[in-house]
Length: 326
Image 1 (cartoon, helix red, strand yellow):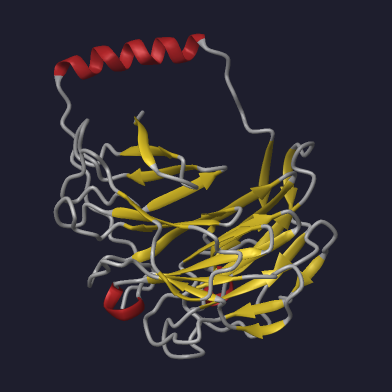
Image 2 (cartoon, one colour):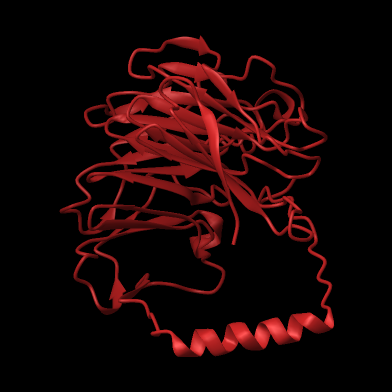
């Protein structure tokens, strides 16, 4: 079993003589531009080797930041809250450390994190309450005032989780609605789970709704990436094969403030030039009806050069409007 579910493909680099000329030109231009440096460096006060602080889970809401450290304390994991980031300078250590009250080795708490206002959502895909890597997620409130070591207000679990589901591999929070990815569900077909009223919920709770793709298939890994905005959910399925093996796709779900039971998508997003191995949907984000989907293995400019796609009108009729790359 992979402890970190990465399937990173090797990159190949081919340098031609013209590369050096281009590099020199770029370097000269870079030296002529103003140097931009970070305003502040965030560190955990108890950091140690292999903590993996900031590896994947980072989130910002207003002037509050949340940074995961999934390798902390024997891979039990933790997350760190930082405030006043709009004015912070120099080296800054956390205001609060978030930990699960039932933390255990290999939980990987903090692999995924999300912030909305002063509420934090943290995934622990390695939690083994319902079998190895069945997973869980935790809600923390009042991060605008929290100090010291803080344990969760709520623990979130899927009612049907089993071994290797990876529930909590991805998390996203918008207002009081959270969405949790579960990309290992049902032979890696994947699913995602919706939880509401996270601003007031307490104890341990199960989902209000389960999101699945209507055309789900083994190895799609739906739920590896998720994004919430308002009442709209977006989930990537980088292993989907519509445009070739592992070309990838993403799915839009609406009305998550009222949805219950098993829900299939309102729309499916694919790249107009999708190809095998692109992994479209490995990363997703959205805001105010606009979605952004990453395809880091796209080969347009060379092996794994990558690209991202912008989709508008997720709330009505999504359409691809822009493809971006560096």
